[in-house]
Length: 106
Image 1 (cartoon, helix red, strand yellow):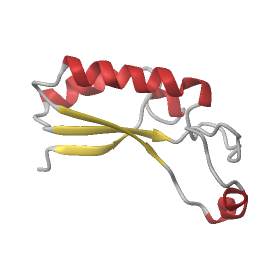
Image 2 (tube, helix red, strand yellow):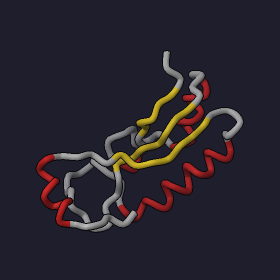
Image 3 (cartoon, rainbow, N blue to C red):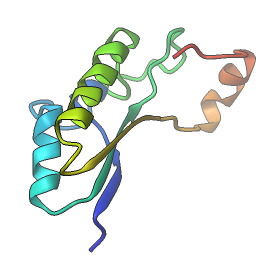
Image 4 (cartoon, one colour):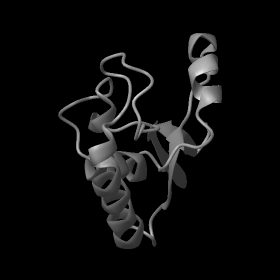
């Protein structure tokens, strides 16, 4: 069995378990013997392009997301390696609008 998961969403994206807190995921992975995890919520958009509901965290949640995971990294550093990132999907119907934007502020 693999002992890592690099694709863990949080409640902020709207389609993961809405009643599970970040720390609960960490504790469950530790209990299962995992060595590494990465929280990778869908990338928030400062200038909203993808208007689908329950797909990504709000831009206003970005700082809280990063701070929450940073605290967990520090708290559980001797038990599990925790990484933070964003999942950025490429969907053909959004390519044109995304390519018109030269940058996306994170």
